[in-house]
Image (tube, rainbow, N blue to C red; front, side):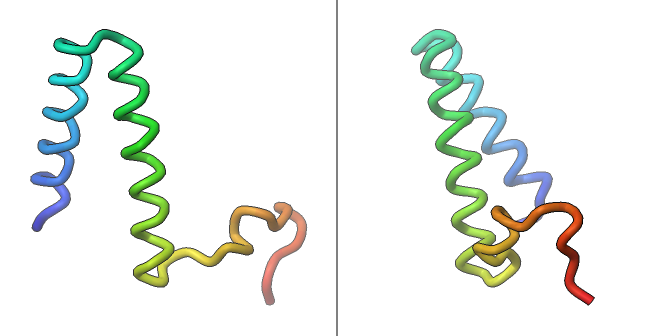
Length: 61
């Protein structure tokens, strides 16, 4: 599935949540989508847990 289709689906989900549930539902869907994205990237191996806790000065060489 292309990134454009994924973006379309995410935008539609946020639109429905905002229309039917209000701003609180919009924020909830956006936050859960972001969490799902990060977990998906972690499970695919694109992210490591240390990426979230490493400081900017501590770079791998």
